[in-house]
Amino acid sequence: AGNIVQWFSIWAILIGGQKIISKAVFFTVLGPVVLLFVLVIQGALLEGADVGIKAYIGQWDLSLLSDGQMWVDAFGQIFFSLGT
Image (cartoon, rainbow, N blue to C red; front, side):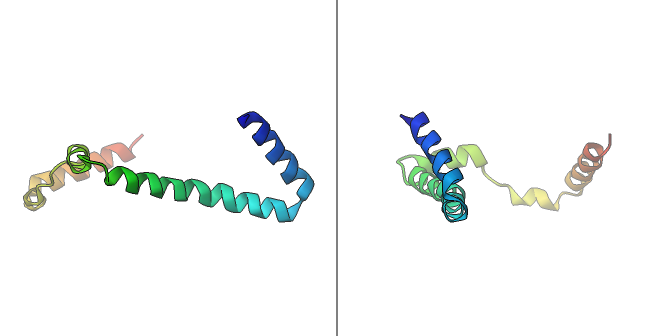
């Protein structure tokens, strides 16, 4: 069924011209963005989502930003990755 919808959509876009193409582009660009926001919000509201977010992102220790050796290592890594 999904394949039939795809072929019909392609056919309608090719036959319909600019009016149909502008509507198709509007839907195909905004549709996934809206769906992504809905899924992120829905996922963030699930039970235990805070535990998963903390496990994925981690706890930030901002006191490490005052360590000079950390900055030297970070810049060394940046320049190493920019090389060939």
